[in-house]
Length: 109
Image 1 (cartoon, rainbow, N blue to C red):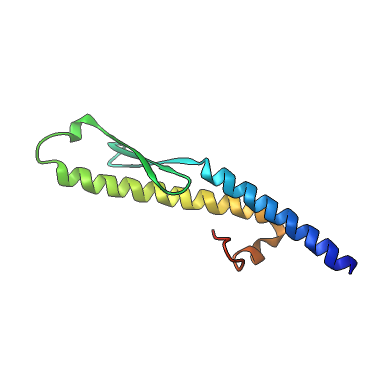
Image 2: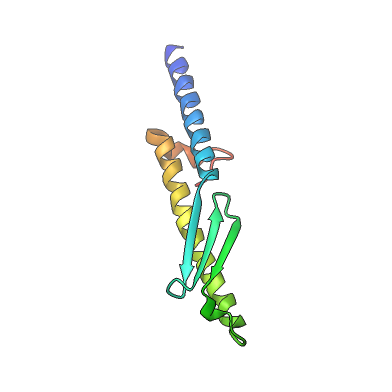
């Protein structure tokens, strides 16, 4: 029984660490860029697009398709960075039990 009690304490500690990591993820703000910085997008930790900044040189007639493509590319850049940061935080929180976390319902990275 003593081993079971210790295991339960470890599981509770891991659960708290994971909850803390998820709270930190919610606070993340990530920027992605495209076109050499001509388009910058900002994502929240949940992956929501919260801001788009366009270089004024893009705001000319006939540039709509270029702008749209650059926004999509900047979003993809930011999403890739966000996914990496989320995975890092969850890995740090899981510590030695990281291999088990991927199989737990509701725990993703």
